[in-house]
Image (cartoon, rainbow, N blue to C red; front, side):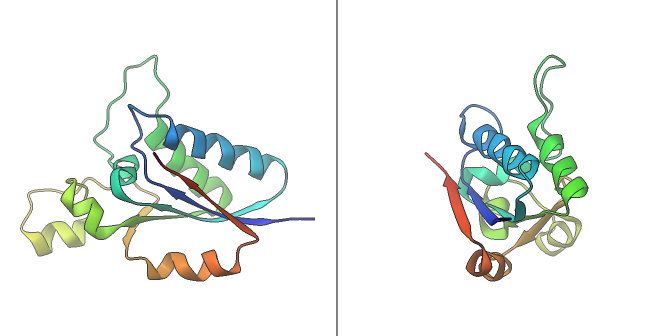
Amino acid sequence: MTLSYCLLVTGPAYGTQQASSAYQFAEALLAAGHRLSSVFFYREGVLNANRLSAPASDEFDLVRAWSELAQQHHVTLNVCVAAALRRGVTDEHEAREQGLAAANLQPGFTLSGWAPWRKPHSAATAWYSFKR
């Protein structure tokens, strides 16, 4: 039986285990043939969408990994717009609106509110939260 999942990630890409655990869980459920419909990044989790993160060459690039997972498996990666702007993560539209010099949202991620996450969340078989 194929199950449908949604994930909530509130931990940053680096410095804690939450986002890495969420990513590993996502890979495992996809490998098992389940569906991951949506991942919502909130609070410090929005830092997973910062394309300006530059891990050392011998470290796992979690930001890029999320982006590749989304592309390969058609997973929606929503980033809370309010939390992102507070932490300096923005797309082209918000950068213009806020008068910022540049955008830094990693491809594959979308700034949004809670609404786009609610529909897949309510239809999911299960949802998991990866937070502190």
